[in-house]
Structure formats: C-alpha cells, structure tokens
Length: 159
Image 1 (cartoon, rainbow, N blue to C red):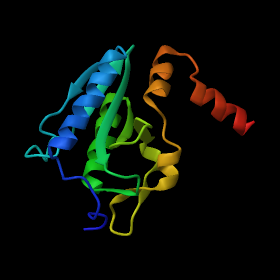
Image 2: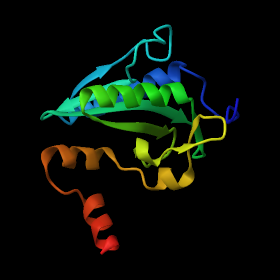
Image 3: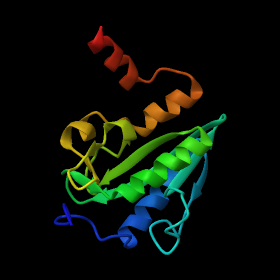
C-alpha cells in the first residue's frame, strides 16, 4: 500500500489519544463534540467520521491523522468517501485534522477540497495542502462570525 512507511500505527493508542485531544480542545472552545470510537474498526459499513463538532448550528466533521513528522499523508478512498457522504447528509464541512507529534504548530485542519487523488484511487495530502491548512482558532472565528488573524492575513495577501 502506498505511503505506509513512516506512518503512525493504524488506530493505535497514539491515534485515539490524539482524537481525544482534539475533541477536548473543541469542547473547550464551546463546540458540542462526538467522537466515534468505532471509526476505522468493525463498523465499516457505517458512514461516520472520527469526530463531529457542532456549534451555533454549524457542523464540522473530521478524519483525524497523527504523524511523527510532517510528510505527505495517504488516505484510503473509503475514509474520504465516508466523510464526504456524512457531510452531504449533514450539510456540514469536512476536514482532515492532522497532528504532527512534537511540533509546536498544533492541529492543522485541511479542507477536503485540498486532497489530491492518486493513481490508485486513494487520496494524498501533500506539503502544499498542509501549508495551507487552517487552525482551530480559524474554525472558532468562523463559527463566531469574526475574522481571525489567519483569515485577515490571507485576504490581505490576495488583494
């Protein structure tokens, strides 16, 4: 399978711990959060993501990825398809939430539109997508209807 080298263990303790960390951070920001403990396990036919966060009527769904270092991430098409289907049904927004263990940058939230399809039909999250990821602060500002510093800077560089 492409991209397996250098990945964190699949659904290991570190991954579950990071899902819980993201859930707690979102909860502390005022979101209602649900973690799907069976995601990636035996519930293959059910279409739900790792985490769902809701605030002020806005729905965000996350597929959580943990890595030891910043490098391209390969995601199985079934994971992306289930997230897309969940978003379609809920009317929410979907992100790949990436935590690079040991990095000072915190969580990187990559919108699904930034994924690139590979020749095998799976998806790749490359360095460019990671560099354009948004932060939890950005998400919080979006929910509250305020512009965060990241958004302001992005708008200024585009004009």
